[in-house]
Image (tube, rainbow, N blue to C red):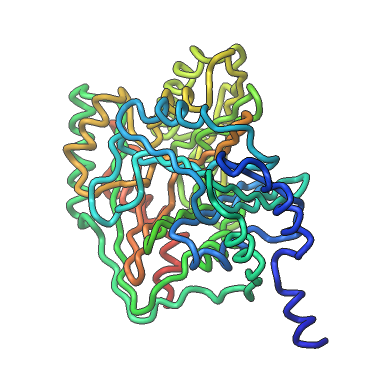
Length: 449
């Protein structure tokens, strides 16, 4: 094969595909324009190829294999404060009808007022991004969607897309010489857990989730979407995600669905109560012990009961099992309850997010008292950790995961985040071990030796 033929095999989009997009973009240039075309392109290859050319990029994959990869910004809606979700809803309501397959990339922080520390610069309290270019893959098709703000010339974007070529599969991250530091120290964090148990015993609240961080300082920088590739291969049953803002990347493999929506139907899958994985019969025995654990069943019930009480006011139908099931991930198995419902007329995706987040799986209950304790006790800025990440479709679809099992990466510095639900009979040493299990998926890659 000639060099020219080889190059044509490597380009991500054909001339005819881009020409069809150009034809659709000849509409009134004084307004936002969107266009889409069917393609045969791997979304992760697309974002790996294009991310260095844009200030913002993102990737999201569901356990079912649906993928959304995006580059750039055509429009951004940002909001903060307790009304952040309703503010986003108002902004997005003004969008015109978008091309088939269009998705809005969504990310938001744990705290309603957003991250406070400089490492989170560029990550807002709630960001909804209509990307400049998106590759959307579902069980029906793969589409390339482009969006142009009013007055924009389509030629530069289409020319850039024409030059994108596929890369080889990335090698595993190689941090070189590196250090790993716990923030706060493990002794300090266990002291926080003990203080929380004391407050619960005194009746201040029922449950609180306490987070900690591990910082990895490496000799070599990590390529975010290369990390996503390996994280996805190792954790196929997780929601795999990345949001790159400037020189920082928020990357993770979350086991937990915060909200999925199709039309009026919604799905939520809270996880609470955890145990290690084993091998063979040992793994089965650990799972049985978890299902029988009074402590873990009580913690799980707190989360489910809170969600049911909130969803009951917004749904005309709500279904869920009486007892939890096991959900097994690479290093941890969880108690899991799948909740399904139908929203009442007039209730939106953002109404649900506003009501259920932060769930007791990442905050605590009662909510106000638990969040007040977190503000007092935690020394880290959670940023988008334990917030939400995914996408929404203004036509009535959504996939949003809780942002767990994650890291904020800036060159040679990676900050990993994990937390545990603390209840009355929590043991600080056991809770510490459980957070270590939650760090493993990313720490194995970022601190490989």
